[in-house]
Length: 100
Image 1 (tube, rainbow, N blue to C red):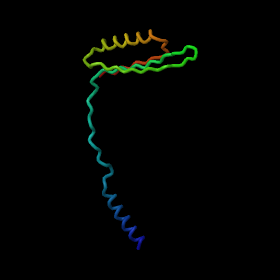
Image 2 (image 1 turned 180 degrees about the vertical axis):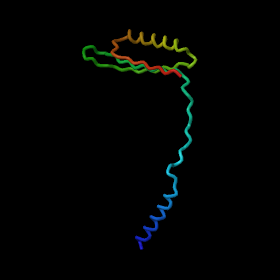
Image 3 (image 1 turned 120 degrees about the vertical axis):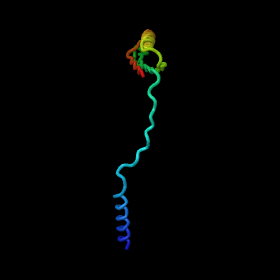
Image 4 (image 1 turned 90 degrees about the vertical axis):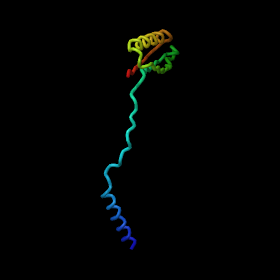
């Protein structure tokens, strides 16, 4: 009797599974607005102790209004980098700017 009730229940489940949709409905994707600002990220590695060669890392991120001209932003980035290169012993730096 127990085997028969399990067998009937399995047939019932296979019947439901045969009628079920293969793909579950996906929620609507939320559209995000595009990038509205110019974002520049700086990653600078300094060598603080010359004898041991211990590196010190600094990361900075700046955002500019999208109405700024690329030329003005790149001039500011160039000035910022020159100031940082003159501060300490820089071993590596990386600049990444994303324009909208």
